[in-house]
Each structure stands twice: as structure tokens, then as C-alpha cells.
Image (cartoon, rainbow over all chains, first blue to last red; front, side):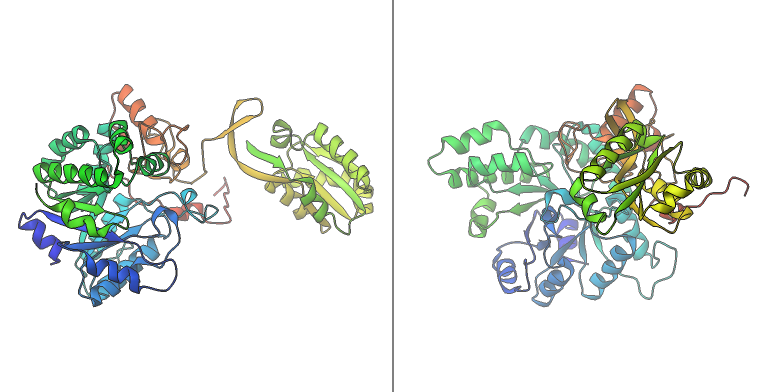
Amino acid sequence: MSLLQKELTAGRFVTTAEIAPPKGVEIQSALATAANFVDVTAVNVTDNQGANMRMTPLVMAGKLVEAGIEPVLQLTCRDRNRLALQSDLLGASALGIKNILLLSGDHARFGDHPEARSVFDLDSVQLLQAVHNIEQGCDMAGQELAGQPVFFSGAAVSPESEPFELMFQKYRKKIEAGARFFQTQAVFDPVKFERFMVEAGQLNVPVLAGILLLKSARMARFLNANIPGVRVPESLIDRLEKSTSPLEEGVAIAKEMVALARSCCQGVHLMTLGHEERMPEILASS
Amino acid sequence: MIISSQKKKEELLAALDGVEKVFLVGCGACATACKSGGEEEVFQMQEWLDSVDREVTGSVVIDETCHIMRAGRDLRHHRQSVEDADALLVLSCGAGIQSISSNNDKRVIGGLDSLFLGNIRRFGQYEEKCSLCGECILNETAGICPVTNCAKGLLNGPCGGMEEGTCEVDREIDCAWHLIYERLKLQKRSGVFARTVPPKNWDRRGKPGRFNIKK
């Protein structure tokens, strides 16, 4: 059982963070970032995030295992068909990777290879089902596998997405398909997030709230314009704009979101984007 | 119908390299409706070919260029002009271009890019609604196809990029799953939301597609 699964099962409030594999072959700085995280149970390794080509997260997650750091391998449906996905899952198991986060993936149009053909042979729900099959010792074609991998399968959700019921039906489908934890898209609206947790709480699957450190009003506007599913409310942009030290204001906002998460969900997924040194402060209960 | 648009003239000019005499083929069906390869465009193309010092040996607008036998018959009616040409310049979709290449060993130059199977909103405005995936799910999705209208072709609801019912790829476009959801709600049906849709059988779209009504 992964540490992440143990902690969540034990009902302890969990923190995860993330690294991106390198754009290139130099992995030391990504490994160092992961090694310097404090009080983090597991480290997500992003998969060509934003459809920008980088080293395969499978190898990077394997390197984390070697370094004694527990990874959450992100796997998207954008770049791989069902053969490649299953094949990577088997490889992940062999590398000792247990936590996986199964995603549809941002559209290739957003990334650095906008002319690429997106795959989407499976969607995230079907991929969760495929993982469930693999855990039963069977591939998607019903053929028996030598050995049965054990995963801790997670999925993503955008809790602030509207219409709510439409977003939530997929959340429910993901749980039925085998999602055993969720990491959310960055959340900024306490009212919307609490509303989501009221419904989600009844389904008893741990939710880690995505908390993204805002560094400036400009960054917040950039996120709103360019990152699918992220919406920073105008009131927060206002706070950042009026502050003499926007980063400090961003840390304060992140602390508020952590406090909210402590009150209504099972953990946080911190995205500090280069300000990893602020993590202990953001996580400290005030 | 098949939506097509004319290739840029520079590209055509490059394709015409080494070609002096051209026989022109247009299509009376989709390419006529798209204004990319009907009578009028064949005429304009003839004038352009003159302007770039190519001799046009003749031309024909075939009723439906995708009809292989009919295309062959129409070409035979113009045997001499076809034979006199170094190449046939075809203003039709890729299917039509290959009807011509199926009937003739001469060099065939496609003058159009085929874009998609499209519906007509109004003249000159076309929209893709169907991807010909071979496994239609429309009966469960309130007559709105997610395979085509969802930028990712997802089968089990919207992705995390949906915001206020719009698509992450283009906020001017409605999220297909939002449209499906609203329409099903209006019809008081749960439709596709009642089940998890299994992975698609892409074998139904095995290439090249073949279908024989007698089998």
C-alpha cells in the first residue's frame, strides 16, 4: 500500500506537491526540487502538462522511487492510445510506482506542439476502468497478465466548474470506475468549493484541494485567460493588485485556502511554482 | 456533404511543375456547393492556368466525381483532350480526385483540400457535426454528437476545462456535453448519463473503409 493511501485511509490530512519532468535530459534539478519538499506525502509528476513536450513522467517517477520519494504518476489520454496507456501502467508497476492520477489531458492546441494529433482513444473514466481491470490481472482485451499490479488510482475534478450537476455526474462516474482519491484543479472560490464538498463528502472518496500560489495580479489574469478550468475571482485579483507585496498576499490567500481545506476535505495539492520555500508557511495552521 | 477549399495558388504552381498541358475536372456535387470546384471555379481556374502559361486541353464538370464509374465514363467522352494533357487538375474532394486516378494512369493534381463532412448553416458557412466514426451514439446523446462536437471526443461527460458551459479550446464554442446535458434535461431523459460508455470500437473505422450493401 502506498504511503499516500495509508495516510488517507488513516484519516490524516495529506499534502501533495508536484514537479514537472525536464524539458531535456537533465533530471537533477527536478529531483532536487522533489527532495526539498517538506511535509509532503507524495509528489505528482506531470505528464506533458499543458501539452508541452517534456521527458516522460514514467521515467521521472521511477527516479523518484529510486530516491526514496513517493510519486504520483500522472497519465493523460491525450498522447497515448489504449495499448500505450496499459503498457505504461505495467511499466509503472515494475518501477514500484503505486499512485497514479488518470487524466484526459489538456488539448494539444494549448501547448508547444499545437499541430500534434491528439489521441483521446480513451477518456479518463475509461482509463480508470482499464486500471481496475489491470489490477484484476486482465488487460482491456480480456487477456490474462503475468502478475497483478496494485495501484492507488486517483482522478481530477474541477469543483468550481458550472453547471455543477454536469461536472458532478462525471465525478460520480469516476468513482464508479475506480477512483480512490481526487486532486482538484486549483480552487479559489470558498463558496463553490464548500458546495462541492457537501456533495462529494457523501461519496466518501478523499479529496485533495488544489491550491495554487498566486504571485501577482498579472499571473492571476494569465491563469484565467490561458489555463482551462482555473478561475481566479476578481476579488482576489483586486487584493493582489492593491497589495504592496503581491507574493505575500498570494501566500496569505493560499493559507486561507489551506484553512478551508482543513475544514472540509482530506488534504491539499500544493502548486507553488518556484516558491517551494514558502510551502511550510502556507501549510502551517494559523 | 464534403467541405473543401482550394489550395493556395503557390502550392498549385509547385504541383504543376513540369506540366504544360492540363485537363480540368470539376465536381457538380459538394465542390460546386462549396464554391471550390463547380462550373464557375473551373472557368476561373482555366483563366489562371492561361495566366501562368499552361495550356488547357479541355474541361468537364462531372455530376458526382466520387462516382468512380461515372467519372470514368465522363473522362472517356473527352478522351482526346485528356490524352493531349500532361496532367489532370481535379477540383473535387480527395474521394473525387481518386475516382479520377482510379480511371487514368496520367498524373493527377488535386486542386482542393478536403476538410470535413459538413452541414450547411447558410451559404458559405459549414459546420462539422459527424465524424463518420462507425458507432453512432446520437440516440443517447439527444442528437448531439460528442465524438465530433467535443474537441477531445470524450464519451463520459465534459473535461475539466469546461467553464460556464463553454469549451476549453474555444470559449466562443459551447461545450458539447453542456448542450447534451441541457437537451436531455429538457426531454426529461437521463440518456447517456445513465451509463458509463465503454471505449469506442475504432475497428469499425478500419481503413480503408469498405461497405457492400449486398452482403
